[in-house]
Length: 639
Image 1 (tube, rainbow, N blue to C red):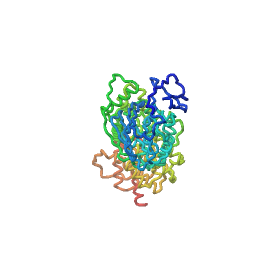
Image 2 (cartoon, helix red, strand yellow; image 1 turned 135 degrees about the horizontal axis):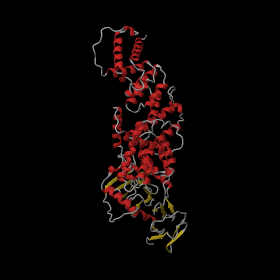
Image 3 (cartoon, helix red, strand yellow; image 1 turned 90 degrees about the vertical axis):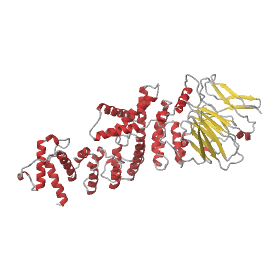
Image 4 (spheres, one colour; image 1 turned 60 degrees about the horizontal axis):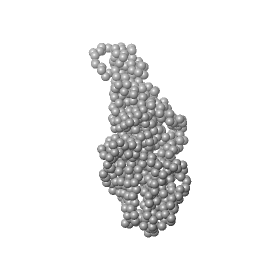
């Protein structure tokens, strides 16, 4: 039997494609590398190849030897994968030590009935942000080494699976990067995750844990992200209510935004959220997991470069326990509510401060429009919507400050652009989901006209918009300007009045000025529509309600305008002694209470003209109030 040998291959002499190289271990053994491969050189120019056992060795003894592999990648990760001797084929246990995270995980996979003739050993493969653990014919585990904290971000396939059947059934050895050696045939493969198949599997799986793991895995592949996002959005639209353990829209928006900006700097995984989930308590079928803390490696080098610098950064992060570095919108939430509260009270802090926030929003929208040249189907970005612009601008400001504090050595301009790209990506993903739903149901601009019956397609789009709103509200993310207007118009169109008012009162539908203006103009004055209009007007803020009432030529709106005018005039009125005789010739109707009241209003208006001259209501005076009162009385008496 030949002894196991280590070979150092100098590739500096052959920088081109490695086509056919033959090595002789001894006179009985030869190994051929056959398929053409693109070979990237390390700094030293050397590759370490372990040829393992030759073809004369008894394969039945393969599983009786422990397996140990060490994997690193460009993000500064350091993983040691270990599988001890197999005592039983009913269960297989292996451990992964995540040194860059400060803990280890021991996995026990239950195999159940196993063919006694199966003697192939376990294989560990390095696949960029993942380590694959593979037992031919039985299980395929894809462990997330970049974010290993939650087990739901790793994929565990066990038993009869097409994924497992498609893989080679011979022992494999992971080499440098994605290169894999087949011990039996001597062929060298480049191992890559098949994005198309992962997407297909995403459509077919039923387990929430697999959906979550596959979604993260597919997004991390990063090849042709626009096409990939379109495929995932299509899947989300078909399975919007199929997940119970997490919110599909939330996870897609957070994960996709994270991976879109992650390549900009290696420390981004410590500063931005990569998932909408903070915990996972559901068991993974067939898998038992034990997590333990491990001592951190001791780095005795004064200056680090390249991989070692990134590894040291990861170790420092774990050593000083800095989970607070992950960005969240708590500060933005507090500041936004403060600004909105001040606005409702008629106050507003420094105009320079607010203008800077709104300028941030303008930059985000400009950045978004510059990246998407195709015309939009949905009527978004067609109104100011200052509340969403404030939220957008505040998020830019807070995220920029967050990254500037923790990203050392990165130019300020680069950080500012990264922030604009990140917030633009959040908005773009929301727009993509809505555009896909709009296109799927073949909606047209006339959906915004309220003088027609709602269709099933409009119900479907309203539902997806409600789910988007739920997802973004809990994360406190901005929405594209015009989203609330479109959502409210569809709500008026699709919902019965009692449901509509329930949605409004619970904050699901927001009564934007643009939406209510369209409602007043499009709906006629049938009894049903009068109820809708009145129910909505009484729910508006006072200033907005006064503006909207002018658009509705109806006794009810006149009554509301009159009430507001009278309240404004009389709020500081002090009763003065008056003459007992009134000049009845100035009144068209002899109704003493009304005549007396109108005389008081007329006196106040003549003595304080500035008190009632507010914008848009120059024609509202005592005469208007008198006419409105008479009309309302006539209507109540049925005359």
